[in-house]
Length: 151
Image 1: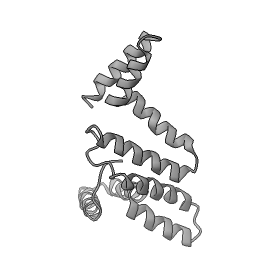
Image 2: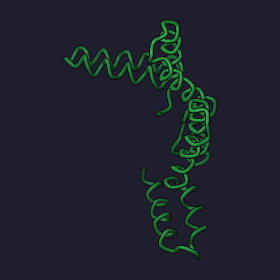
Image 3: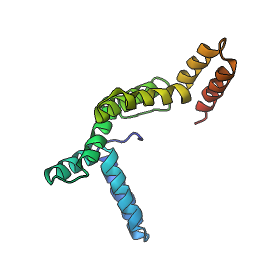
Image 4: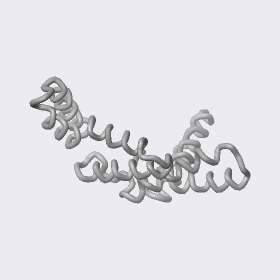
């Protein structure tokens, strides 16, 4: 989930979806608002309240989206997530959001496993750890470490 500022996110979504509607893409505009409602603190929170009060079956999905977005926001919301240290904060927020949304540690663990495989520090440390015992794995992780710099 990309970093967004409250209010600016809503204004941006409104203008972009208006542009979609004016250029004859109303379905794309609808998709933008659905994405917003699933992945933003305010959008998913409002939709969770509305669908929950009406006892609609979509309520748990919006609840999970709200909790994921809230966890991410608590750790900085992914600001500068491509910069070392901020990347770790963004991963912590994403992991916290998954833990809150799913209620167990498995989803949160997967976030950190992805981090260990695909981030500069995560894959670099893993490569060093495997260098003597499994040089082939260390080489693969070293490539991931290098590729993370160009992502």
